[in-house]
Length: 108
Image (tube, rainbow, N blue to C red; front, side, top):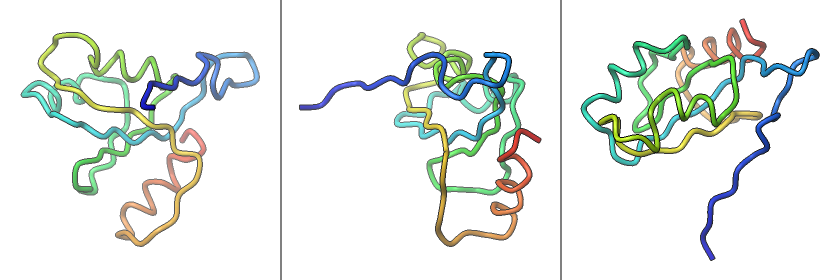
């Protein structure tokens, strides 16, 4: 049975209870015309290494807050997609991607 699972809003709190900077993967299912321009308006770091159909970003906030900031669930012309926090990663990719992940994994 398919369903939606949501992490608690307090996921990955900092020492003071506020959300810390986290690496996320954004996977658009249907990319609306306003998606890329919306990303440019947000206070996030977007990895400029091309990954087919996925965007690595560093964001100071929760999964839900990033999804809402993008406009998922609203009719803002950004399309639909999913935001996933990255806690581990492994694979083969360009040196630029590994460097970006290394720099941003600790909230830098």
